[in-house]
Image 1 (tube, each protein chain N blue to C red):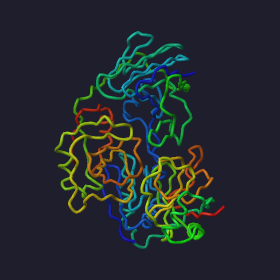
Image 2 (cartoon, rainbow over the protein chains, first blue to last red):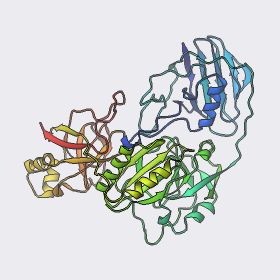
Image 3 (cartoon, rainbow over the protein chains, first blue to last red):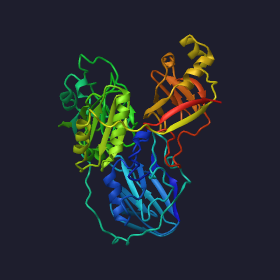
Image 4 (cartoon, rainbow over the protein chains, first blue to last red):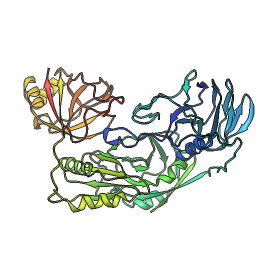
Length: 286
Length: 205
């Protein structure tokens, strides 16, 4: 039993909570970029928090069921249709076998999450079913015709129709950043991030959010040098020599040689990962 | 060993900066051996070790304590397991390496197989191990331009490191040979043949 992919939209990948704990082997953590949204979708269909679902970039996805199941779509509010009939996101929805589920394109935000009762049951790689677009671990991105196996639901089915509150993303994302480890490489690190209004670049992806704006000035004593390779973590604000910063997301490289000016608080990363290209980002520096 | 400099790295991690790659290897081994609870990632690199803990835990306090208290007189961690890597020394850059070092091809092989290496850290792609212990004449610059595709199993040198490409990938290291060993297989536990702290020898086949 499972789901058959009929249309993917711009990018559809399988994600769960990722595979942290392998960075010392060069393996990125990966996992859903908006973890709370996937967790909510899982909860709505009675799944455990570790169940795998789909991360859909800008929606536009069509799936067909081969067995009855419950599904829920979360993330930004988005149109959801079952066999052409409009239903809504952020609630569990029963689908009989042979039903067609269409997910529209959200009016704001970037990534929708779909959970199915029983979870996407592909073979885990290093403890996770997540697609890692940097290292190529996990399943490849979905294409039309793929059949996704679905596990056996084990929780009690949630009450049908329970709607949860949802929040609409603001046009400006404010994130909290803590300075370090390499803030000393910059002339005025706190002001360099706090003062400009940054824009999300269209080259952003699951590896990182690239910003457009002024390159933070290096401390005169540091010049244009690089560091010997250093470990990186999710949320690291890395600054290449002549460019604006990159904020690393789940599929980030495990080491890098450009200085990391600061690290964004993990609680703020899901909102950042939902920020569309062209939207603005501001930093609060702690 | 000098006391590490502790640098903040977000709310739930710190970066310990040390004086040399050897000190990084020793510090990472000591932290691993301590088996502190709630440590999510423990990642050595060239001069630094990252320790990331479970958000909400107090594990960073214990990490700080361990890193500062035992800088002197710390028990030397026992050396890691020895892994032998069989190599066909027919790399595309073997002659370039010999010419740069001013020695013969056989001497390059003798130097490369004569040393014992340590896995200082992994990175670049899953299972790519940066090996320290390269003899001086083989410490050479990267190629002027990277190759778009280096075959899996290629054995290369760059700067102070030797390494093995676990999969086909772009790369600018000087290639001296190739191994038929699988260096990374996510279906195997552990997935990486070489892990930080392991000792490595190359053997000519």
